[in-house]
Image 1 (tube, rainbow, N blue to C red):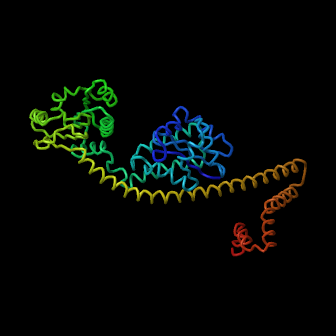
Image 2 (cartoon, helix red, strand yellow; image 1 turned 180 degrees about the vertical axis):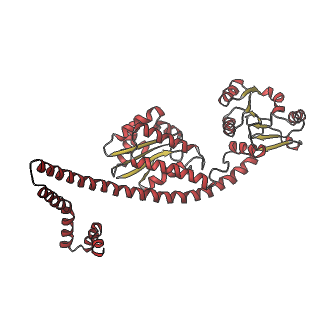
Image 3 (cartoon, one colour; image 1 turned 45 degrees about the vertical axis):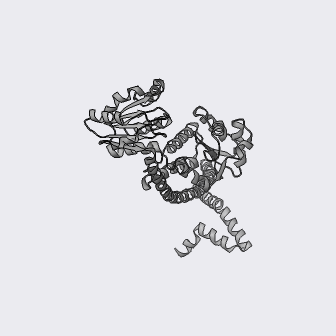
Length: 421
């Protein structure tokens, strides 16, 4: 038996190809069942996100090419389209890969936590499809535990590694809690939307979104229960803002020194944090000279991000050590499973022998056989049946001169314990 992990991600394939071979949430359960129906496949789980699609299987040896062909056929694309861009891992490397993925070590943003939730969704889908067995169930559960250890025992997620997240972290560092802070977001592009998402996650409850077109401002505001305003309304709303974060495509500054100065007067000099994420700048540089105004630019935040990326890389090295240890733990458990299966088979054989001979003895008793004779016959036949295979193995090892094998069988049968007991 073997474990397989194969797939593609943001490092190996283009967005257009990733879209072609992804599994939609609606198709995920049917796809997992179809894959499990393949000959030699015992268990399956599929992880499919915007940045990666990966298939995990437990089954017979030598399935790798067949699994790849199934994937290509499922999406009706040539197998050659996939073969050049996928990665394949087997056994321990498959285990290591899932643990690294769940821990955020293989993500576009090192250490990002979203992938853990996506892996848990994949696990839930596989359970719903009834395609998980003992091995993959254990692998996913252990990978989730590893990811939790990585986040609690290392600094992998402690530092912001995107400008948007760094901006929100800076605001939280200055204001402590963001629940009572009022935030004015200027712009409604991808960066501002990401900032709004991070603000919401950090508990910010009062947000305004200002944009040149009100329709786009409303679109972003509705996602985060914020208020939408136009750019022309910014001066009248700025005095109520504790935090201003701006990112537009304007060629010239849209927030001037006079606007901020007047807002500070109306705020009675209560401090205001202004973060300019735009290039070229949205906020005039002279604003930082105003008392009570604290201005940070994208360059200021980029320096923080670079330091934090270095910090996360150090944490990732610690995480790799945790994962290496847990790969060994899983390998030990997997080896133990083969012993469990053997023990189960051996016990089943012994119980079948017992039941057969016991049934025969009971029939003899019911037929009027002498109890002592029936019991003696049962004991004799049961002993002979149970020692037949070990006796044959001992004889063959002795005749072949295989002393190591002979000693191993003696040890398994406990003969040395009897001799020295």
